[in-house]
Image (cartoon, rainbow over all chains, first blue to last red; front, side, top):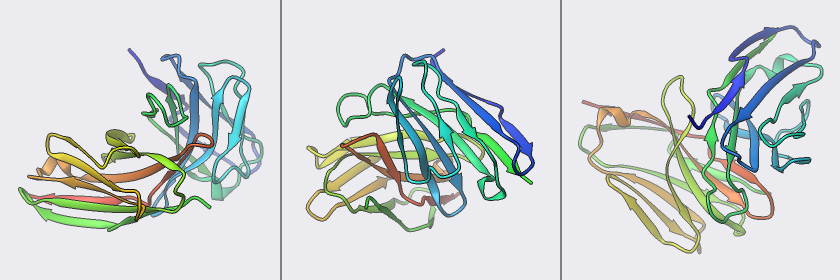
Length: 116
Length: 112
């Protein structure tokens, strides 16, 4: 089954404790992206990757890191989480993100993070 | 910078009525405009999209229109049903990279 998976789905942590949220897709998609969703603010892009070893900042990259060492994986790293990073996080992937062909983004199930 | 404004933030209609959600975007370089539906507790899912070389696209009860001159695009849902109740997001993709900018969302409620 074609899908985007995220782990963990729920996470409670404390300020300053490094954490990683994994994202994996089995559709051979070149493009992957991370978003955070907060009430009243919609979905805001954190980082995206057009291909392996190519990453770029979205609208709200501060406090986050990403890496794209393999095509199927795009982990989101919070080196020193803070309470303002409490949010619902979505990973997404698509075949191509250049405005041509299949731009449809497929979202993972979401990771709900609470930073105390 | 890139920005997408979406209105209204909430919309309540009677079953069978039409619903219209409007978005404006700031950067004329954008050329792809998707609409996503998000049901409570679930992930966003694409319901329809339109590219800049097209003015209108329909898929059964859903249609999207694009006015590139005015930098507006709208979602039209006809004959609404209770299962259309959800949050709808518009977005604009910027061609110089992979930036996808979302609107703030519209919570649609269809009353039986």
